[in-house]
Length: 427
Image 1 (spheres, rainbow, N blue to C red):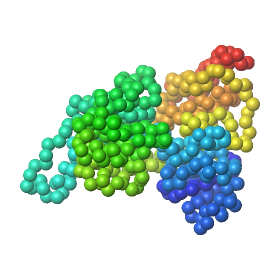
Image 2 (cartoon, rainbow, N blue to C red):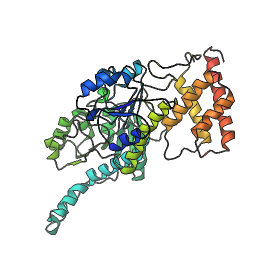
Image 3 (spheres, helix red, strand yellow):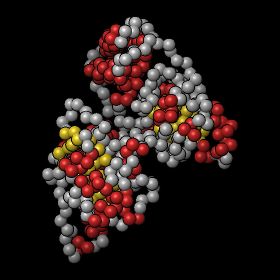
Image 4 (cartoon, one colour):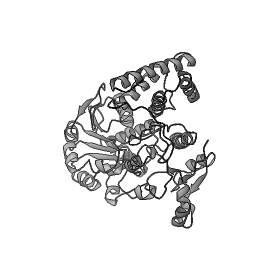
């Protein structure tokens, strides 16, 4: 394992720091009496950042003060607090923690949906206040016959869709593009989807592109029986427009786990009985938060051991290049061939021979497949490629591991060879 000085700018979840400190040199910036002076002295030595989330933005200005920075490992599936595009332009890998929190957040999303539609928190408050001894609780709306429109059908969106269908709720979705092979209707327009559904589930990434994407017009299109649920990022919803829509009866109710300026929640929202409000607890179970912390650390350890990152962000895919100044292998390029499609093909090969366990996610498979492509293009012998797969130590193979390694390597070499031929590159 190579030395890797890790900087943690803010405290966040203590378990992350504990796990990193067990394996790597860790510097806790928030404990320094003079952070500016510390950065001037230590900034040139830092190679990695462990980000605990939005408490400390990892922007271009901050990263530029760390000239040897190679990797930013972020806690959480969302990473808009990290300027991943700047990192990509400067050869810095950014990782996040997808997959490990999907089920927990999806459970919370359905709980918020039920609470908002059936007014369950209000019913509990009614009972606790003693009002039930005098009157019955008013009748509520129903989940029956509803259509859920999911804004952002990624991993979490798909997990929500599965749960919604088990409740008998029809599912439709909107995103940047249609996803083939799904049993849900796709709407290319968010406004059209809002008109077609009466539960609008927000599960898309945050960031400038999606800021206030759910605005007054979308809420009007959702309608007076409509329910808004947001388990993504508070920035996606125009909170002032939401308050106005709830006050006027433009929509029926809202269930929120996220807010624009956390942990501050607008008093106007707090005052509304039609809003069910949670303190950003979507993934906040002990099991899931530990898995997220372990994913952050696993990415850092993989980097320190000269392996590819396990869960890189789309902006910074692994290309076999170590940081801004590290060694890069001189490989043939695939030219016009869609490298993503090639890697996806190899992932399909892996998945055909491997029953993906519950504690793994497809991001890891893509990282392994990308590394395999790079090694094949570098001319590595099949025996070494099989040894690389053996080092990953994946279980649950559909055949003996030795045969599975050989089959994956042979089929991957063939796919790379076909792609190189198609692009006119030497094989």
